[in-house]
Length: 146
Length: 146
DNA sequence: TATGTCCTGACAACACCATTGTCAAGAGTG
DNA sequence: CACTCTTGACAATGGTGTTGTCAGGACATA
Image 1 (spheres, rainbow over the protein chains, first blue to last red):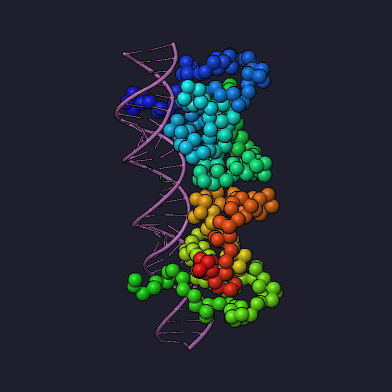
Image 2 (cartoon, rainbow over the protein chains, first blue to last red):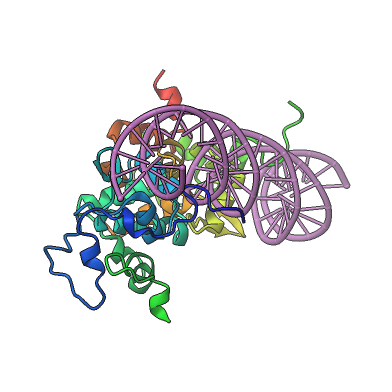
């Protein structure tokens, strides 16, 4: 494989983190909930892609499709942990359940309306494997099972 | 177009109707509800396909996918009006909303669980155009609007 | 007997979808 | 300067949904 092109399989670059991100990565320090606000925009697209296990190009497409709406700062997308979790739900529905994006939209709208919870629709362990796992604490969900 | 091959775009053949079907087609006779039991298996696959505006091959695939379960008599599929209505809902979700079959399964399961009604999720007129319309009285939904 | 329609299992064509890849040109940051 | 971001665009690949078609057999009807 040649030199890694731009937006290729993402590699974490700490310098990309917005203000405050470093604090969250001190090993063994459990962040106070005010630091772990799940809606706080904190990750650049390459990091969010890595945490969500999708391509940055895919995140841009999800936004175009109306599935995501990350905040902007100086026209840079900043993803929150809630955004990342949402992408993981989408990933669960598309990869694991084979639902296409049109179907995902319907299902997520039902969840937004409070009629369902994706968690309750499928095997909890199955959903958990896709959706939960390190975001703020940077552990890889698959690696956690080792 | 050459001679119509088997299972091609369906053409109604009255001889295919199971017992009792003729009674329902007397013009101007409003059937008693006991005749119009929506769960009564009454239509061969070619007629059901025509009424649902899909191909017989598609009905067989829906059955394979677990989306439909028509009754059998002497190993012949017999579809009820409820079956046909269900196919029309599937058609609405796939053609109109672009949802794939995996997504349709999730949505229909939610309806079966009583959590949602597909009718309430979308514009009622839109759903109506796809789902309602002559089944027992053999009017074509699109033709009704003329 | 002949015809029509059904059955299962199988392969295929075509249009569309989802994800990724790549590119150019520009902007911002260190 | 190097890196990463932005938008807009085109393309490759594997998968999906619908339809088409085939063979061989079963059943009903004329």
